[in-house]
Length: 200
Image 1 (tube, helix red, strand yellow):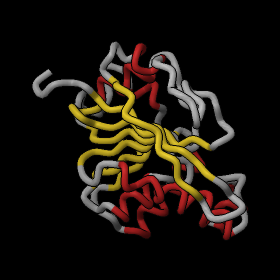
Image 2 (spheres, one colour; image 1 turned 45 degrees about the vertical axis):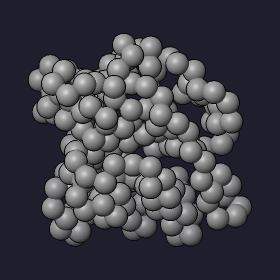
Image 3 (spheres, one colour; image 1 turned 90 degrees about the horizontal axis):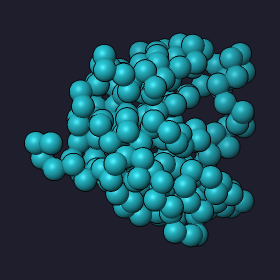
């Protein structure tokens, strides 16, 4: 990754220690609150975070890495070839394309939709997540302590905008704080759960 990053600018984080903490640890520390099997979709995965570490930690996940930038997709394909992990796939597209009727993703099939290094989209995304998550499925959004956008402030009550836009399908399921090693501070993961009933 360090070699690819020097040539193709995969991430603004370049020091090995920072990559370990800000990417790898930040991907894994909230894993205790996430599903451990089933279809997982990592939206805007970039260099493969959090999707690849989560797949290694939870091998029963069927992990789909969604990325639209060509250089990052090329890196991911090389990485996947080296890792040789089963049920780990990269898809060169945007979430907006996955929301279309001809999407390759079966409705109500995902146990997890993860968004870590991208701003939580507003209009349209809630509907996509509501259609894509299976009953009880989780939408997980990583957020730094200095990022109040996306419907909530870390210490405050989340606003119901995403739930409202999903037609009530996505219910807020909590915000969990976790801590990176000093001096990197605390971060949060926000969770929404699909309220679809079996058979809907």
